[in-house]
Image 1 (cartoon, helix red, strand yellow):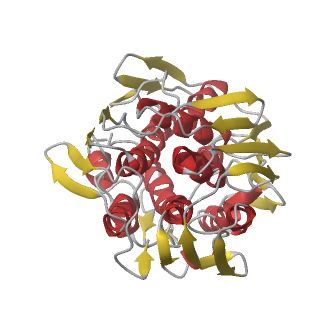
Image 2 (tube, one colour; image 1 turned 30 degrees about the vertical axis):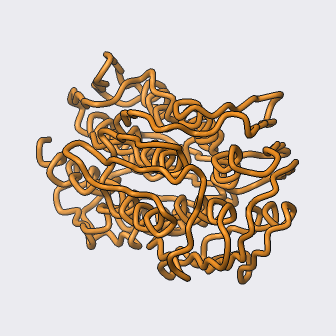
Length: 402
């Protein structure tokens, strides 16, 4: 497996703010990370490729202003992280990207930054975002019922470089909470200190800033999921290297779902092996609020399992790289599966899948999930194979091994 996209991007942010030089090993090299790296270079970080990752000469928190515009493709994580990060600098910054990125909301983050006296504007709560930066004051921020944990991570990552530290309090429903834990872990690995004072309450002081670190990125759990799915659909044992069930990546929660439908999971320090016989039939419900990126994977799994599968607590998938609830509904219908889109998820009736040409909506996770379905149903084709380059350029080569 390639390096984790989530960990690579968080490590690049911390290393770029750090004092001194970092080496990020086994980093993911993909379209998303290229866009983030290009943006960080414009903000003063010195980032160079090496044999197994990148070296990063940090800015020590001194953000430069070498351009008016930072283009981030369709990388929503980078857009949100850099929206907060540029506030540490001085002058005008504009953050934008492809048309789909400019439909993805940033309103709660923009509102939080305004509370810290940042001069920031966006249109209809979406990019482009324009910031007139003059340093970031920090302070106490309350976020309620947010649709993305990336707002929280963006604020926390900048915390050590605010004027007086930052306190973030989360109220109501918080989706993708494990990604906040990943952020806290990376910040700690680079020398910052995050105190969790209660459920959904985080404090970051200014006494401990980031220092240059030799950091190794673990394998990507999201990328591994497609090969775990292949094991379930093909009824064969598949071993995936570079990942461990002990990982703190939330998407490893897919393994719990696979066990519930009858798969056997074994794990070592550097691998996870999934094997399967007949999948357990009957009605099942999965709350996937903490692993939303796995919904396409579980959606395809559900198409091949006898019984009804209800996926809940993922309304925020409508603002991902595509409207994933609508995309999964359309493409499961296309292969002959009965599916209904719910206000917060999907209801899928397992059945007999048929060949079809799959529209990807320029969404890497739609492409990879249905590519695995194509292993089980000859004649399924993927209309746009290049979209996987966003997160997993080597996907087709690895898939050939099966």
